[in-house]
Image (cartoon, rainbow, N blue to C red):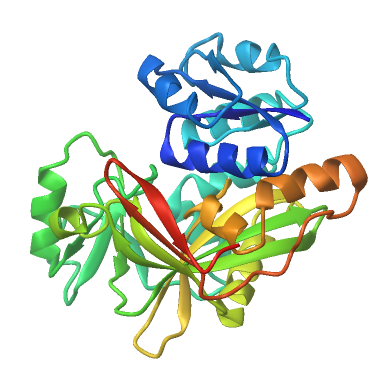
Length: 319
C-alpha cells in the first residue's frame, strides 16, 4: 500500500515511516523543510515537499498526493487536516476532539471528571496566588516539551513566564514525583483495538532542560492502571473515539497515574512499540482495509529503546 507520512524528517514522522515500511508498505515521506526531506529520504521510498501547515495551499497539496492514506505527525498539520476534513483514510480523530486535545487546559476541563489529573490551573500572572510547589509549567499549546519547566514556587513561575513572552497562555500542574508514562491507542468506532504502554526513562539533553520532549531512553511496561486512565480520558473527549491517540501520564507519590495531556496522534516512540509487537500505524491500515487487525496486538514488556544525538537508536529485547 502507498502511504504518505507528513513531518517525516522529524523524529516522530521518521518513526511512523519506519513502522509502515517494516510492515511492507511503500512510504512517501513529506516535509515542509528541505532539510527535513534529507532525513526523511533515509527511511522512505520517496520524498515530497509540502507547504507549511498554515500556508493556503497546504490542504490542497495533501489532497493531491498520489497515495492511499496519510499519517500526519506535526500537531499544526493534524489541526489543519482535521478542520478541513481533507481526507477519508487518515487516523486523525474527529476535528472537535482534536481542538480539545491541542489545548492542554481545555483537555483538563473536558476530561477531569473521567480520569485523574494532577491539580491544574491557568497561570494568572499573580505569583502570590500559586503558593506551595513545586509546579510543572508549560504552554497550553505546543508539543515536544517546548518551554516546559519545573518551578519551585509561584515566583519562579513568574520569572520563567517573563523569559518566554511569545507564549500567550500557560498551564500549571502539581509536579508529580513518579514515573513518566505514555499510552498509545488505536480506536476504531468507539472500540480500543490495540494499545502500547511505555515509561520514559530519560531525555536527550535532559541535564540542560530536564524535559525536552525527545526521549533518550524508554521501556515498554505493563501498567493496566495507566491504560485504563488513558482510555477513560479519551472516551471523555467529544464524539466517538476513532483514530490514533497518545496519552501522557505522570505518577504521583503513591504510583497512581495521572493524565497530563492527550495527543491526537502517536506520542513517545512508535518504533519501540513496533519492536515490542504492536505496530500501531500498520494496525490502522489493517482496520481500514480489512476491518480487523492482521498484525500482532499484544505488547512484550521490558523492551528498551536507547537514543543519542547523531547515532541510530538501539533496541534491547526486541525481535
